[in-house]
Length: 428
Image (cartoon, rainbow, N blue to C red; front, side, top):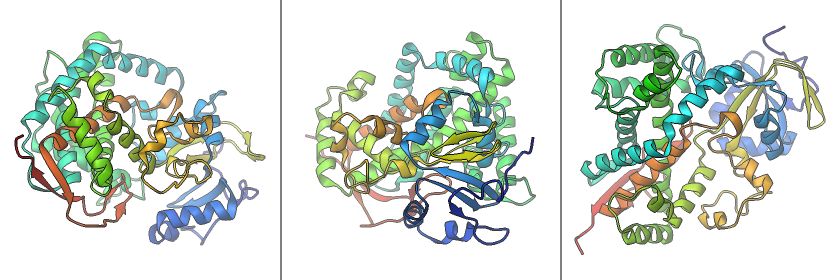
């Protein structure tokens, strides 16, 4: 079986192949992302082919396609082959690069580490760290959140405190996911990412971990995973979880500092909470914060795109697709479809007061959906909310810039890092 499809096998699919060799790569590099997406949807509909960054793939931008591909009833859409498009070999031997029974076994073992008792322990670790954290007055908020999340995930996943070397290697690995060429060419961004992953692995293998509790130790002592399997899954939780969680926490504050009504509402709710260290139940009762979190992820989902590759030929939307077709689902688009979301590009958390329709449910997939939904979604939400809780409990944030562009690669974040002044609240 061929491992790829070419322009002839996809010639019946709407779209444009672009220039020879480079395809439409320049469009993706030079044109604003939203304008380009709107143009493609208008010209070709919600199924179209793209040739860019050395790949030929088909974009599916509808709730129906999300449901069809992510439920994967016939088990023909490969998670492993799809994510190689984004991570190359960086995610090898992790949930992100597994399918079928192997994926089910590993996911089942890892799911046990997110038990109710363990979540209570996570809560204690996060709250204790944030209560002791010094909040600076002037801050680049993304870097501030990123450093916090790396420290917290290291404590939760491996136990103990990360060294500066471990922190830097962790950031370098995820930054390499933004490389356009996923080959380890010496000197390239992806090559540096692989070197960072190997160095990170070596550092962690030599570290002394908390034997009382950590996800890694739990997998070692209470699962059927081998030591190598447990280590690889734990390492990827640390790598993949930190940037996405930091992005969510940053955009929460990005929108709150630009929508004072919601800032006031969320702050008042937080100050009415009877505890300085809220547990999960207390955190879930902060309705305004939950609405803001959901709307933030609708506008800037941590998973902007979800790749798959078909192992067999299939039909969808009136088209036939050959085996080995590379597919791309785009939560970044379906979360903003004007046909589903009123004032789709505007920040309106109140929209989530109404239960989502089935179409909206399958359009709103910031953490994916189905068997491969992000296993750390709960933990990411919990950390992002608690960072917001503690910052607003202690300070009054204000943006130093009225407007700030957004960078989308490798993970969405304000291009200047969200410059904030965090003025400490006076005692009542």
